[in-house]
Length: 348
Image (cartoon, rainbow, N blue to C red):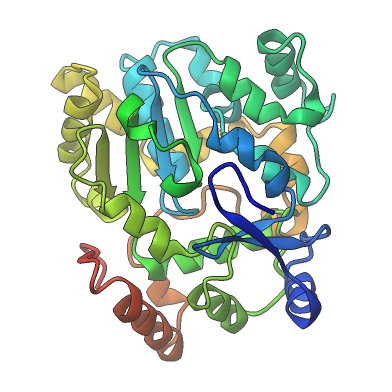
């Protein structure tokens, strides 16, 4: 099967599929690889792939693009706040980020476990009915909300450039965030155990092996990163490392301010920095826990290990990965990233 992007679909079969379904209990409808690239997705991706590739971006859009667990939630809150709430007085800030910053391909993720949003997700469904009065929820609630959201949109995606419209960067601004693979693995493991849509039931050793084999959702990370790194000089792309955003937060916000053309004052930037501090965001997440997040999370794991915002630290991998894990990921970095020229600051 050929997709609109020119990619082809390979379905996982046999022992490989059995192993995947054993370790990822959320993959109840199978999984696919999108070639070339070996991009890994639940089978539901195929239904929506053409919509994603043909998504109509606008000149006023800002797209926050990352591989999973590279700081997406934090960055999208920073970008949205800079564009819409620099004085911290916008009442829309109290609305769930699912509604303020549409996640373009979230329908694919939900469909992998057959958890479509329902009437119980009152805030999301209200937004859908308001923005898409003639819409059909079966055709993708998040995708249709993203389409119908008025200017100026801040959008989120984990898709790589090659699976999105080729004119994306010539049309809209993109903020791409990269993060040290060691911390990505630890954070993604937590995320994959927390979410019912993946429901990882395996061990840390197995998860690291899946990572270095490029067999995690949205994988391979190195190719995702390579596609962005090769475009880093495009005037509509702002490439930032998670580690720099943490260590030199105000300095990075000033760079974003220039890129986004938000023209914020130093006082406003300091307000944004305080408001989007990880601890402040974690408090708000607990206060704003919505029905969709609750329906997505394994509650026992949520109660014992925390929610969607875990630690947001640089170097936390040292508390979790052993020497063998580090050696495996170091070899992965050497094999895939050395020639690209990417190195991760403040991560040793």
